[in-house]
Length: 154
Image 1 (tube, one colour):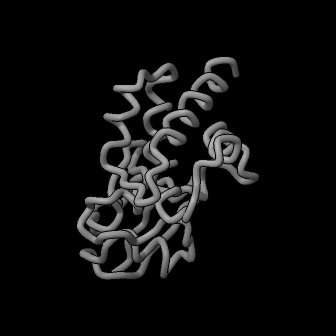
Image 2: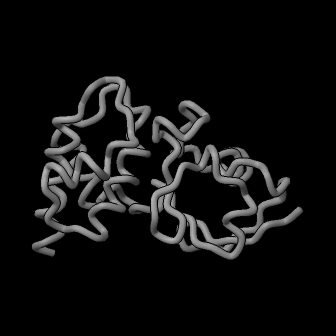
């Protein structure tokens, strides 16, 4: 079966069963490997992507749910790693192992799309579904605040 949707602004057609998790379509069929498989149960956040601008877990979202919709992945944040979050992530040395980072970035991007001056509580709430096994939470929070400041002045 073919399902048509947009990914990072580009129209695509995926040929997979409707119940195939979106994660596998993104990685295996479309070749975008930035989105990671973590737990497979929508608990860790490594597979976070945007569906019509809202963060979702691609490991539990069936392909049929994205028909005709817009999907955004970490590859779509910027072409040159110059999105305010990516710059702040590097500045604050956020990644250690790096595995969770694409999901962290996508959750943070969704937050900053609607709130350019988030409090610690706002950041904690928005990021609560993303687990960092390396424990870089203080650096993640600092990077989000830094990116928010950049976006406010842009």
